[in-house]
Length: 269
Image: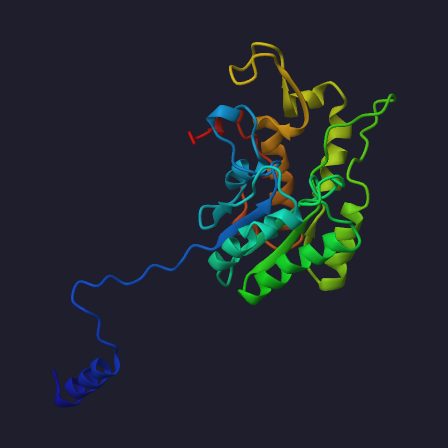
């Protein structure tokens, strides 16, 4: 090696930071999709099977360079999730490049419960803004999701909306604040309409007596999902994120492919 080349190599080496012997190069952090929501999205466990939150199925539609952190919890509203410190926990974990999906509305409607109730055009919007502002302050991107529809049909077999003014209030807030919105309420209502009253039961936690040891007397639940319903709602969410440009084509998969219900598993508590 020539003298001039040795001097160049030495100069470059001196400019590089020293690392302790045996130190591995840090791997880049995986971008994470966080979910703040209620029981329709939440993780379910073996004692609740076959009840399934759509957040459990969302990873099937995201490519593996995205992680999912599902913080949705049964029975929470936009208000009680904040009051219990759950939003603070989520915000502490958010990093630049992450997404925060926010879906509330089912329990915000419970006017007789002051711990959970919010009024759609005032306190509901005010609480949602805390999620939006917190995510942005962390360098993450907030996304508002209108609440997924319940299964309700009128006498003529038409799917009926059940969330009152809450979806409209969220849509207005998203437009005013420039927040991406996935209209899960409208998309799921259209899906239930397409299925019809009887076939749609297979998407919800409708069980005959003896069908599940966890529900020996059966169950007729028009709010929570079985695996098939959770998978299709997660497909609506992932597809909506792609359509809104929140996720790129390389971030999603299987949007047009069947996903077996057998892929859903319920961990023990």
